[in-house]
Length: 116
Length: 115
Image (cartoon, rainbow over all chains, first blue to last red; front, side, top):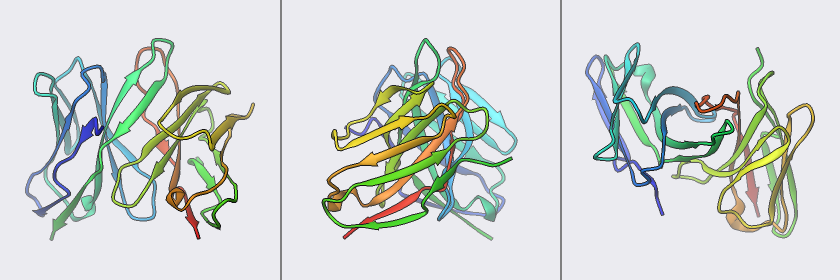
């Protein structure tokens, strides 16, 4: 049961344009959502997160939007740069009342290529 | 500052053997999680440990076990290896705070190949 879905395996964008990566989830109990970036031969690197009580979070060129009613979130990268070329993972988490995660569920990733 | 370190980086085993993978978290991080990533998939949650106790477990058989030591480092053990256990094993550490999420910081993984 794929609770976090990234339906686009790849995306190509021209440098300077906007990159939009999409993610859908099925479990309405998730209360945090995260995006990670992964380069080959490296572990995933945290990019940005959003709480389920918010609908937008922005950090520099990266903005995450959350639509709870649609169980959908998206990552916008503006402007896109060649160094952004990587695999992007959407992830969702439940938070234990005692602190920490219960577990983090990842999507299968979207490979972004930013063309110079 | 040192990030999450994992050892070894690569490992080749044969079916039926067992393996131990090691992880040292970022200094000050008390939570460690283990993930398995097979080619073309996202990381799959195996275990989370916090304060030396198992706090979460994914859908993996009992051949998979882990522990966390007093210095918060961790080991993942896999017994009776199968070909399907070939994967990248990722360790992630994080701070812990009540009611909020702290991002996990990942190591570069151990690439396990089963022959």
